[in-house]
Image 1 (spheres, chains in turn cyan, green):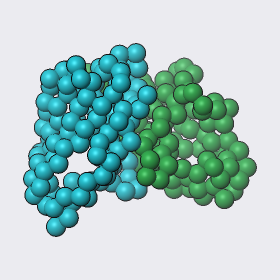
Image 2 (tube, rainbow over the protein chains, first blue to last red):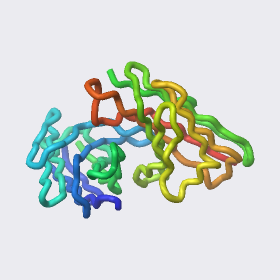
Image 3 (cartoon, chains in turn brown, blue):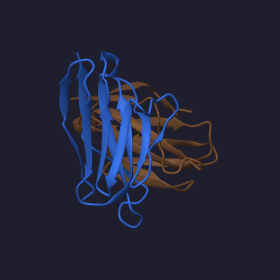
Image 4 (cartoon, one colour):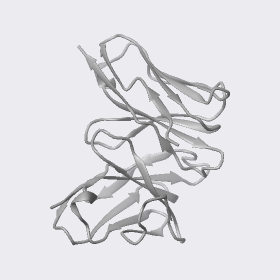
Length: 111
Length: 118
């Protein structure tokens, strides 16, 4: 079953922060975050493997709450280059490296 | 590192013809590759898992006779859309999973192939 992402879309001014959530109805082994620009392939941002793990990539960070079966992606002091669609991909214990992607969150950062 | 290429990047074909799409891992070996399709403004939907040297595993609802997958080597997987129809028009993306210890646990995506069937 597809994880649920929220919000579906968000518009930010440059320098503002945003949080994207990803929730699953299944117990998760890992959560992967990707960003996709229009007409391009998704680009890997980060993977979270352990409950409670937090990671950062530039000013983009993420956390993984294993018990709640959810992950959040934090965009801090957003830059114009952060615009795109963010997808979480979840892997459950029976999946064997298969990822199920959420519906995506469209982010537009304006000057 | 971890570069995946796809060829062609863009193809237009007539209804009824077959189209082959190649996916290559350029700087690492991938025992497993995945094929996705993505409709405009929608998420990536997994079509099949391709394992080197064995038959692909298809997701429910994906016709294996229509979408032929061959994973001939540790760096190449191909997807052939047979007897393509306009409803097969989509953005097809592959990803490659590295061998453990190299780029483990992470799928790296190719740039995608946009297929338009007239």
